[in-house]
Length: 79
Image (cartoon, rainbow, N blue to C red; front, side, top):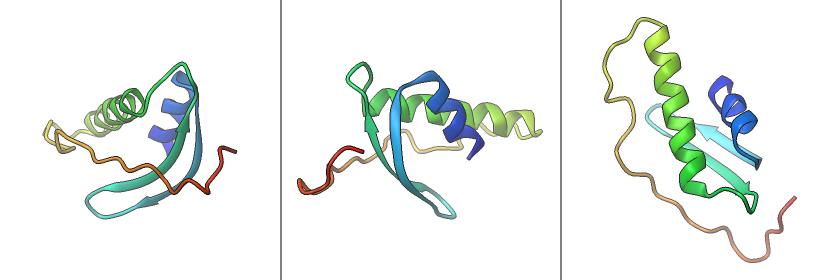
């Protein structure tokens, strides 16, 4: 949650839900017009790596190089 909150302070997006899994995370976000999903994910990954390294870990291979996005069904509306 710390990384998501820090990312939300830097980039404007609505966080509608998330599910933290052992090896990945699912998020439902709606970026505002001034940003993109790619920028949000990039910022989130950088923030988690920074927090991970501050806790004493040195392995930089924390996240896979790609992420997979899917648009929600059309009946969902922006909050």
